[in-house]
Amino acid sequence: PGTLYVVATPIGNLGDLSPRAVQTLRGADVICAEDTRHSRPLLQQFGIDTPLLALHDHNEQAQAPALVERLRQGQALALISDAGTPLISDPGFRLVRAVREAGLKVSPVPGPSAVITALSAAGIASDRFLFEGFLPNKGAARRQRLSDLAALEASLVFYESSHRICESLADLESVFGDRRMALARELTKRFETILDGSIAEVRARVEADADQQRGEFVLIVEGVADRSAAQLAEGRRLMTLLSPHLP
Ligand code: SAM
Image 1: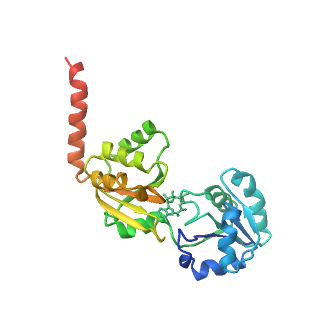
Image 2: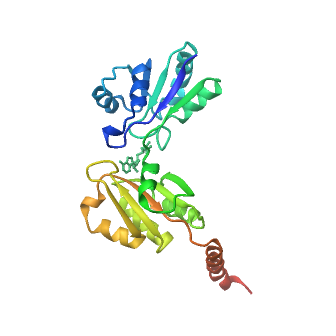
C-alpha cells in the first residue's frame, strides 16, 4: 500500500519549502490541497505538476474512504494546506485519522508552522506552552475562554486575523492584566514585526498604528507567574463575590 505524506508549506516565504517537500510533492500521485486555486501557483513555481484534489473541512469526511482506497491500491498521496503545517488550525485531521484507522502509513514532511516560528523568536518562555489556535469569534465566549486559561503556568499561544486583532488584545488585557506578551505579525514576510512588552504596551502600539493591524498574527501571553499567588487571588475574588451572601 501507499503512504499519505503530510507536507508543510511556507507561511510566507517561498524559500522555506524544503527540498524534501518538493521531492515528495513531485513524486505523489495526487496532492490533496485545502484550496487548489491557492496552491497551484505555489506548486507551479517549483515545477510540480502533480494533479490536485480539493480537500477541506466540508468534504474531508466524505472523501476519506476514496483516498484510503487509493492508498490501498499503492498510490502515494500528499496533503498540504494553504500555508504552514496541515492539521494545525487547518484541515486534515479526519483524513489522517481515517488512514491510520485503516492501518495504513502516514508520514510527516515537517516544515514551517506559525506557532513554532513565533515561539522561536518571541522571548516568552517556551519550555511549556498551550496552543489554543483561534479564539471564539464572539466577545463573551472569547473572554470566557481566556478566563478558563488564566490560572495556567504554561505560555498561551493564539492565532488571530486582522479582523479581530484589536478586540482580542483588549480582551487579553482585561483578563490577564499586566502580564508580558509578544505579538508576531507577518512572520517570514516583508513586513514581519515582533512586538513585546506588557499586554497594555503592545496593545497601545497596535492601536496607534493602522499598519500594525494588518496581516496575520500569533499572540503569545506568558503564563501565570506563581500558581499559589494565582490561587490566592482567585480565592480572594470568590470570597468577595460570596461574602454578601454568607451569614
Ligand atoms: N497551518 C498553519 C500553521 O501551521 O501555522 C496555520 C493556518 S491558520 C488557518 C492561519 C493563521 O495562522 C493566521 O490567521 C495566523 O494567526 C497564523 N499565521 C499563518 N501564517 C502566519 C505568518 N506568516 N505570520 C503570523 N501568523 C501567521
